[in-house]
Length: 369
Image (cartoon, rainbow, N blue to C red; front, side, top):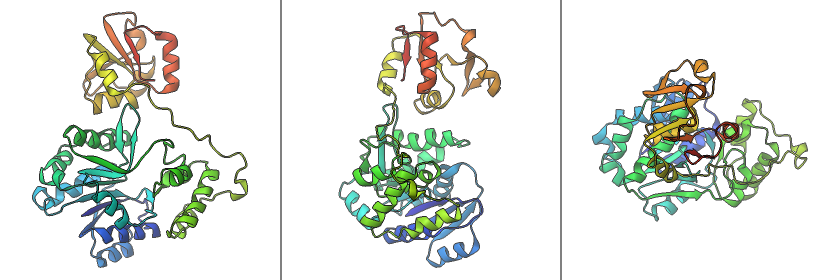
């Protein structure tokens, strides 16, 4: 069974979605389309004529909450009638090879949980949540149902990353399931920044829609040509979406200095085991940073520091005195020279450099960058 999450502000269904649904039908006994918000009537009728089930829900909680809605509505017992559950959203074009080919290759690997692309950033490992497949063992054990039934409420985009994309990988990894992917990202880290390099060298059979939202015409032009030359995928499916969104590629600028430098994306220098070892050395722990990296440590890995530190002025800006029950203080309110406290600096790379000038390089401080 496949569950497809659809979202489009006005409910318009682009042609690439019809192609994706056709591919899902080719390998699924049942396809459920969950629309976060509106869906145009003619598309809904068409999908139902193709024997898809269409559910319309409030646009709330991103794709993660749409999947939770579908899985809990299907129910624990009926979910067990299927040997695989596919969770797929509409944030990509493709696949450029058939679903049957993808599943033929991956079924031979006998994975319990897999997706199209796997990434390891040292701090977190995850499979791109735009396409996930759960095997029979995860279904029959109730682990898949239980995960969604108990999943943290998704309010912000960051919640969807931490509690769904990162969280579901960690959940099944800790339970010992066999995890796999079609593509294990080695060099060209970002699907969005390097679509051409991922297509050609990593054999990633999709392009993320977000790649068209950044100023990267040079790489996208090469990517579009690569698809035309190497796959049977109808490039008009992408171009019609671009036309509706009033997006163009400046082909006359091809090779004219718009190329971004191809390199591995900056990733944190420490892994979670380094952080656990650091924590075990100190009776008290503070986390410096109440943003993305700090929330990964607290929300995903359940680290419970005595304090969360923010830069001066940041607490009043957010008007929050705590995060998940942990008090928040500004850096000027604490004794940063207290050698009985271990401080984990969970800021982005730029802000980490600023923090280093104030905190120094003492043994009681761990920088994730």
